[in-house]
Image (cartoon, rainbow, N blue to C red; front, side, top):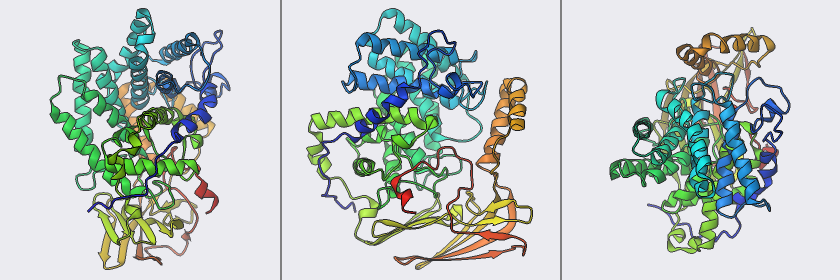
Length: 550
């Protein structure tokens, strides 16, 4: 039974737009506007300004998406002439062309990387911008624009991402391919894009958890990246509705998939207004609002989620656009711009006062009745009462977040173990082999210790990597093999130590945690209590206000 939330207030402030306006100056500053530079029009300052890198991350070129959303919806905050705005847009397109390799790909992490993710992002962002601004530009510029995008589409059709199953990357590619199939309708390439996009959507849905309904990110669910995945799937849904070649089947399958995914996601906004965290497969705490704000027009759980996130953003209780660094800044900027335009339409159209909005359900943490939810595939247990909310991840060794009276009281990241050679091991790394026993109010979790790889790069690492970049990694098979090994080394490593941890958790408002190790050496040192992450993940660790309290 869904409990109704009657405390939703009409939102007159567009918090997404406030975040966008605050960050627009630093985003505009990313662009190289010096026409004497070979990097003219590129948007990676570490490359063109500081010259600390030998390649440019193509992600920055995607700001064209957010710019055009703001411009077309009359939300651009500066008195910029149309001529100057279109000149900047054209500059970004030319910069993207400069960064495109012969195979039609762009890069994020190293030269000749052929990044499926970044190529998909830039193709998607330019196609969104093209659709929005095409009536404002000349026929010649349209042709030029589409000829540049065509190279990225070729790459997406003819390539695969093989180093891991990352749903948000695949969703981005599908959204880009569907958009291309519309602008290039009736051609061989348009048909291939349509077929590849459909194949990717079906692949995402097939790999969606059949019990919990999360979208797979490496080993399991990650709420932060799931919100980003929904951002692109929502756009794919929008585009599918315009494609006459599709019957209602794919649209209905995707809508059903999204509805179940959003219901799952609603459990991971916390009583203090934060979202996600250490129990996720990628440890992220950010929230991508664009797709969910759009879907909230016809999905009650999405409406409840975005209402709470908007309140959290006002007081920095969730990771905001202002906390993000360059690696994530532009995709989230674009998502915030989409959310800002949707919310602006809602405010102007008085949609926030509709009877639909008044029936928004309470989020799980707001329910007054006690409940316990076990997510079988995630290995996540949620225990809740009027005064507490506890999230436990068994597949990550029993890491947990325990909230009492709307405040985070315990954030247990698991156990670190240092052996006689100063090598670190932890039971925090995701492991499907962990065992869980639940009886009444007691949970027992038997977990395994895996080796941590926490080294920093050094000049010798870079020398070897660069030699590989310009030699053997120019061959696709070998390049993908190296990526797979890097992902395994830094994220999905399962090198098990012959030591287990038995964690017993007494559930309730006054939670109790007991740990006992088996197979531990008298020379091993146990470390417990402080925050730590057992994997490399660039997208974790962004600041929010609660960090000042811990």
